[in-house]
Image (cartoon, rainbow, N blue to C red; front, side, top):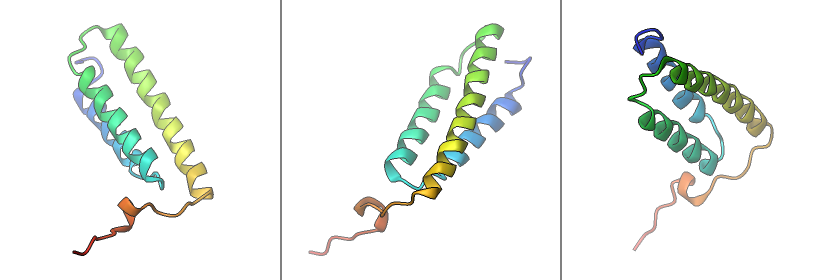
Length: 91
């Protein structure tokens, strides 16, 4: 990871998380966050420079995809689910 820099990888990770948080739909947001976290955990010990370069390229592509989907999602807002609306059950 030295050639790519730990700082750059962490920066990309943070950008993916921040962008995933922007999804207006709860299900898409939680799915994207889970996928980003799982992918980075799964590949945290990769040492092969070629594989690391491929993974980083895929991550940049994913970031662009998430940004496009967030933009499209903002055009078609939906109602919040019960989980998002802060519904509290009273007894």
